Length: 272
Image: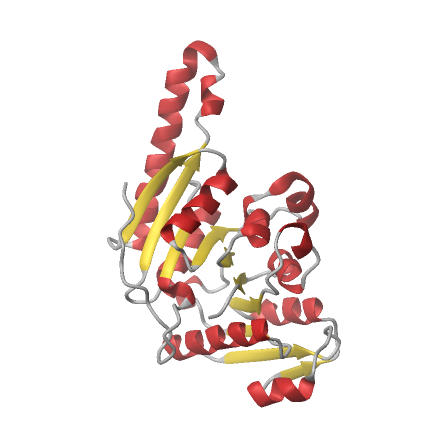
C-alpha cells in the first residue's frame, strides 16, 4: 500500500507544520493500538495526512520449518485484519501500510519516509524499567523518534475525548512549543486548558513563565509528580521534549511523565 501525499496542515498564521498535520499510527492488532487510532482520528487536523502501519517480523516465522508458509500467511492475515480495523477507525483518508521487519526500526524508517509530525502508539502498560531494560515500542519511540509522540491510553470518558488538556511549562523553548500545541487543541475543541509550572523544576523562572502563560498554576512539588497528579482528571497531558535521544532521554521529565501518567501523553518534539 502506498503512502498518500497531502499538503501539510499548518498552525494558523505561523507557516509551521501542525503537530497533527502528518500522523503515523502504529497498529498491532491490540486494543491499545486501536485506541491510538481512535485518538489520532480525533486529534488529526482536518486536512491531515494519516498513515496506519502494521509491522511484522516474518523472518521469525521462517524458522518453524515445514509450517513456515502457514505461519507467514497467518501473520500476514492478522496484520491485514488489524489494518482493516484501523482503516475503519481512521476513515477513508488514511493510507495503510504493511511492513516486514523489527517493529521499532521499521516504524522509525517509516516516520522518516512519511515525514510524520507525530507518531501515535498505544500504551501496553509496561513498567518503565521494563521499557528501559528489555525494550518496548512506546519507550523506544520516546527515546528515538524525530517527531512528536502520542502515547495513547483509554480516556475515562471515551465519547468526550479530549475533554481537557494539561500542559507542563517551565519557560524553555521546548515547553513554549508544548504550550502552543495545547492552546491550539483547546481552541479547536472548545475545551479548557490548564497550564502547570513546578517551582522545583530545574532552571525554572516563574516570572518568565507567567509572561508566556499568565494563568499558569504554580505548584511546589517536583514537575513529574505535579503533571502526573494533574493528569488524573485530564484527557491529555502535553509536555515538551528537550531534544534528548537514546540513553540521554532517560530520566527526563517528558519520558517519566509518559510512563507514569494515567492519561494519554503527547510529547512535543521540535518547533510546533
